[in-house]
Length: 154
Image (cartoon, rainbow, N blue to C red; front, side, top):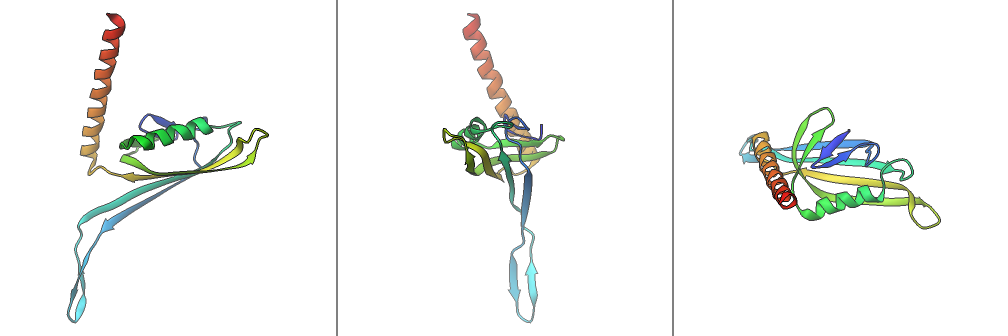
C-alpha cells in the first residue's frame, strides 16, 4: 500500500502514482508603515494541497475502474482521510480535480496508457478534528452494518 484516501487504496494494482507533490501555505498579511518596513502578522496555516501524478498501464496496473472510483468519490463532495503507507496521517482532504489523458490505443479504442493527475486540498482544522470526523464515519458504518445484520438475521 502506498497511500489511502478514504477507502481507496493506492497500490500497484489500483492506481500507482509516480509523483506526490505537497504544497503548504501560511498566512502572513502585512501592514504598511511610514519610513519603516512592513510589519507582518502570522494568522495561521493556509491551503495544504497534494497533487498525485502517474501513468497507468491497464494491462499491468489499474485502469478505467480505478479512475471511475476516484470520479465517484469526487462526485460525493465529501472529505476523506489521507494516510500514507508508512502511517503518516495527512488530514482530511477533498478531491478538487481529476484529470486523465489516454494514449497508445488498442483496436477497440481503449488506452494502453492513462496519464493522470489527482489534486487534493486539506479541509480539516487540526488532527483533533480529523479524529472526530473519522470517529463519526466509523459510528455511521457500524450503525449501517448493524442495520444490515438485523435485516439478514431476522
